[in-house]
Figure 1 (tube, one colour):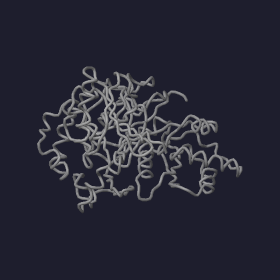
Figure 2: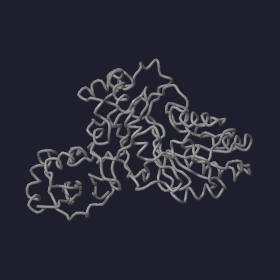
Figure 3: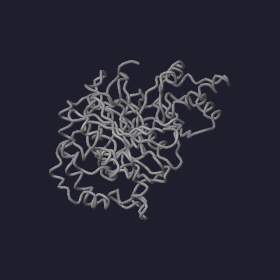
Length: 412
């Protein structure tokens, strides 16, 4: 793919300049959220926004987990008091499985997807074939807004109707596709079967599922450059791929942290953890919003010249809640065990089955007194989890760097 201009100058800022600008804006952002969004009025009641001017201070704020939205929104307000305006003043409200509800406010490229589309080669004056759903969930609208912000026309195809999709591409001759990669592959295969021309498609920006090399290869075999965007129904564009294809570059609207699952504690760069996002958006100001996705920060900046933080990509789910002997064990409980024993550097609960019943073992790393600690941990496990469990000391560096704090190793 040929080199091309950046979306704007923000993408190539000095990283320290970006950090300074974002944290200079954060106190006012927190103040507005606390004053106008009832949920944050409660959550941030003991927070002085003026003091939150760096990552260390941000890490002290409470985390709101995506998995908690069902309960937060169950009190009658469909948005759970998380917006700075009443529901009737929003542009749209969407429903995702759960059900949970997400807001869309007013403004050009509100979801921030234009940047991701631009990085995949989309340009003004082109037609975009959009196969994301326009029904209930925001994906279709999300990518359409970005395309319009770039100056593209959009064919709102939605999902399904493969033969009609092929016919539309044959007739309208769009330059780009947005949707899931597997559906694009199906469309291309159907076009080959029907003898329809889809050669106008030169680029794609895909999301919603994994993009393994063989799937990307099958798409690009048709002469279509295939980039990807990592987005969610609540945040919009979180990170996107550039032509360098070395990780996903975080969107300029966000402050992203990677934390140990079950906690709000940031992990070191290169360690797998849960993606937590603070979005500098006034009408739906999600603050330390835990996405439930695992990833890790890649060192350095992208070879393409964009200087923002890079994520490895989606690496699994952070909510590893597992049922053991009929009771749920949560990542937060593992975090509590570690909190009570500061000598532990890393830990994970491993659940196995001895042929008769579940067996729970806490494997832990400790720089000192590992063997002595092994004898005292079972009492803490029993107290925190209300289940009996053993403890096993392992040398530092033994536990995999995969973000797991609970591993279900029972035979299927």
